[in-house]
Amino acid sequence: MQGTNNESYGFDIDMMTSLCKIMNRTCDFRTMQFSELLSAVENRNIDAAVSYITITPERSKRVSFSNPYLLSYSRFLTKYPAKGVKPTFSLELLKNKKIGVATGTIFEEQINAMGIKNPIIKEYQSDELLVESLGQDKVDFVLVDNPTAIYWEANSSGKFYAIGPSFLYGNGVGIAVNSGARELLNAINNALLQYQKSPAYKRNYDKYILQF
Image 1 (cartoon, rainbow, N blue to C red):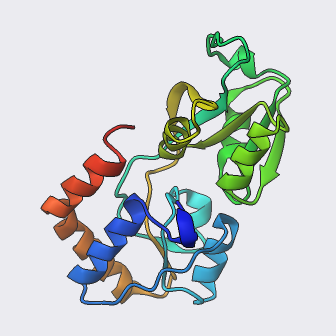
Image 2 (cartoon, one colour; image 1 turned 90 degrees about the vertical axis):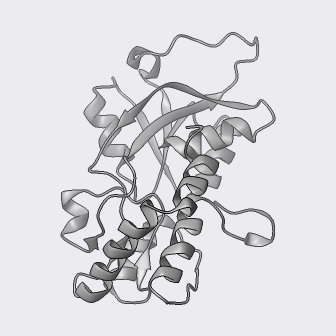
């Protein structure tokens, strides 16, 4: 997530800061579009990518992933109805609706796998553009990762809310590295084990994830 002055923050940022300390490395964070991350790792433009990246067989053909550090859940986000009465969620509610997803994610595949009838799927380059489009009624719903849905519900001044249950997908969330970077991957996995046993992990989890 990005706050004022384009500063990134969130669970992944705090986690990587801790991992870099454990590995005795310096973190240099670079903000990129989600759809660019795996290509940047493949081309060695960056050493590692973190952005709630779901581990899938297709992605694992392109890059290597760390051990999962979170389960991967998605959730729908929508606008509060004008009359203030929330509809009961069902897949039938999504029939023939415009649903936004971020480019490069697997949410389009997930929507199709759900069996929703005639969804009109629209892609946007970032979560921020997704939410902007939702606010402008260009889409009826957006499908994002669960923490993002809850974040926007809590920080939209009552404009948006997460609707329905969270949906488990993929094989968890991992850190992506170049397939040839075995030493770095091993170092990250070892650091993850230490981090998950530390007080810093509990603080980070309680701050960003527990409420979700």
